[in-house]
Length: 484
Image (cartoon, rainbow, N blue to C red; front, side):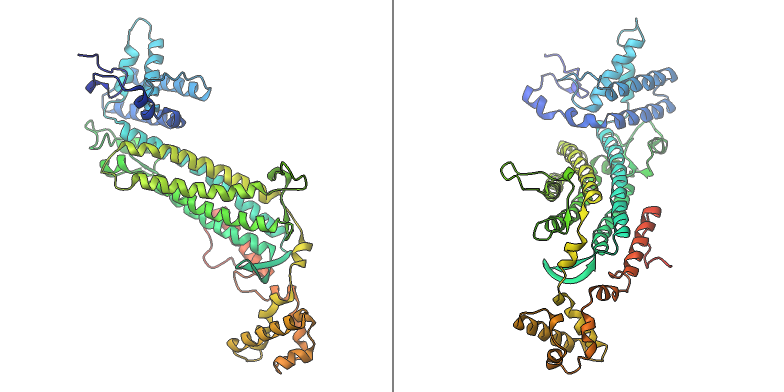
């Protein structure tokens, strides 16, 4: 009979070696080494729980804690020596190296370190171990993303506050619609990102439950204190069913789903800014730090940062779709398919972190052309003002809408702006237009009429800024506004 594969955590059952191709296909250390600190933190908490129930002695616990600290230092300083073919994943690698470190500190006691390190895994499975590592690591990454998202919102609020006097065309269907404040446009995306901010907090809260102590699927036979383990690791509570705990990757899907929605919002603001930065619009100009040129055309300044943000949104949607398909129809408990979640979540957090920082950089450095924005306003954008003018005279809006449309058609027919029509021409459309009708063609006045909450008047925009500031200070958005 062949010698068992003793270098594997699962080797006792097997007598043959893995096909080298299968060895490479199966390994995950190239990816899950990112979780080294979380794996070590979980192992220390687990060792302390095992010491509390008599599995480990006080001396063994000290050696494990000391050894794991050294292992962590090696990872942090790029000194960890990975052994291909042996270190299958982060759990195997850390346990193998822990045994070596303890051996080095206990000369003359052959394999004592390996024996102590081997006791660490008592009652624990890689199933609950990786579930724990993932939750700890994703929590850390999302807290970082939350901080980056806060910075993005602060930039939007700051620009909205200082550039509140700038007016621009508002668009629907990519057609000029009504005049709005530049600040109002900024905040329209600010509130998309504010909603993302609130949802992110819920994603973090929902994943923060401890699966460690669930074993492979059926729980722990040694009576470890799972509450103590969870509290040490900063969890808010327990995963209450051991089969569910080892098979749950909903928190990864929730993170990717959040990322997909967030990047959808990013793609939309990126698209707007691509249009606004075009020579046809000239509303904004990107800083050189976020633009590139053409290899053929020297005059080109391309908004590559914005285009890449749009493109990355598609990648994020693909990550969610891919891992959703992986998890679909899996049988209960742990299955190796779930290992694919590691690659997906690593790509997700990298994409989100860099995208938020790039967008923050773009928004904090772009320059605005109030002159070009004002030039893009045209009298036809005030057609609704004509309708509202007649509403105030008691004419039903459905009728005033039709009348205003006839004025638009008349101006087009005569080849001049609506504001250039004579009073007689207005009254030729409808006799209820008075001598004061030309007052409708004032962009500032039109904007300042939108004083209802959420509108584009200065007063309304300032309240939106105040609401956003409350969110950033407290984490909660005022439901009905801010008094004063």
